[in-house]
Length: 88
Image (cartoon, rainbow, N blue to C red; front, top):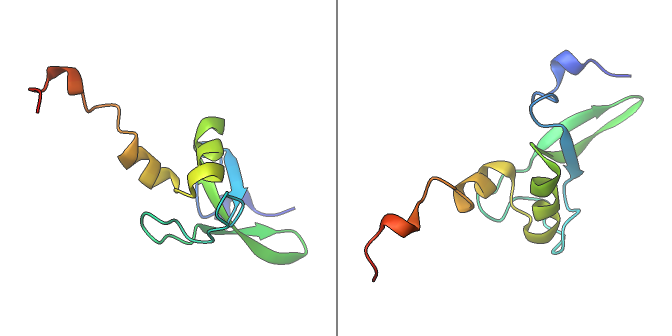
């Protein structure tokens, strides 16, 4: 098929891919950062613009919001412990 060593991302770390634009809004770019994703090589054809995700939940979130993995990591940062902060 194609050479996995020349992939623009590590397929072991980001095994879930979604074609750019396969989201609720049809965004081809991430609305958070403007990323166009990756050009994933396809055997015998033109590369496909895709976004890579680390798990199925992140891929599902892309289909809803159009956010790339990096923007999802920023939005859903679990290190923010709001229980320890003073109330507003």
